[in-house]
Length: 116
Image: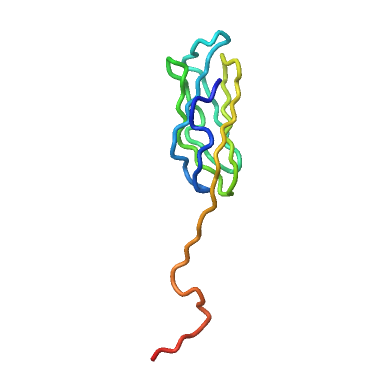
């Protein structure tokens, strides 16, 4: 199995990555492997839906729906081909950026202001 595109994306922690991930599964001779099962396993507390994808007639599968975990830093998604692949496992990475907290209102609520 080979990673064609979609590696090293960036998204806020706890959010869905925007770009597709493209994988290709081939047999030992480099021929496309149609209908190969690819099992997706996110690390770092992330999630992916669907967690199983199938290749098309060209041996290509698109992965969508990877939500990064809530901790900032490098995150991983392991793709494992169930059959027909020379290299059955590929690890995809993405970087989760910190989530910015915005507070509305008075930043010092314990202080009392006098009105004139």
